[in-house]
Amino acid sequence: MRGNILITMALAMLATLAASAQTINVKATVPFSFSVGRSTLSAGEYSLKTMSNGQVLALSNLDAKITELVLSNSCESRRASKTKLVFHRYGNRYFLSQIWTEGNDRGHEIPISQREKETARNSSMQEVVLVAEKH
Image (tube, rainbow, N blue to C red; front, top):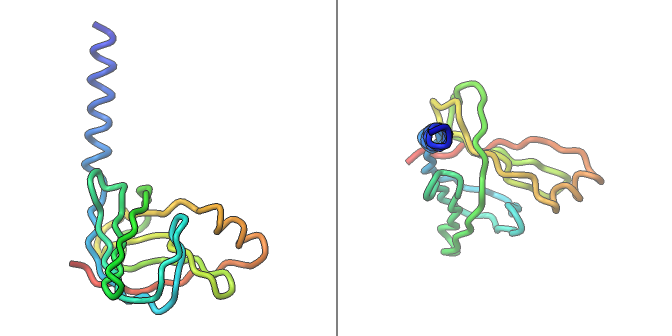
């Protein structure tokens, strides 16, 4: 009986987490190459969409017809006043960090990659925000 209660509670928690995942469907023009996960993507027009449970993001370069999949975590902040992509900049290297949609207090955060950690050791970080278009 106790085992059934624990399983029911665990399933309820998973359902709550899945329901709270923020759906993303945005477009943005990125004027510089940037890294996400283990990949470096070229400058261009991008479409970013959540897939499956909301933790997988599909980043599609609309110019080059290339799609990169990356895992993300949910993050919270004040309600976003605009749809935006947030990058960490170290010198001339950019790393995608967060994606926010206007009117939401939940966004997506890309885990810091080993490449970004190594780059951060030698440079100070600046935050770069690009306004995106919600679809």
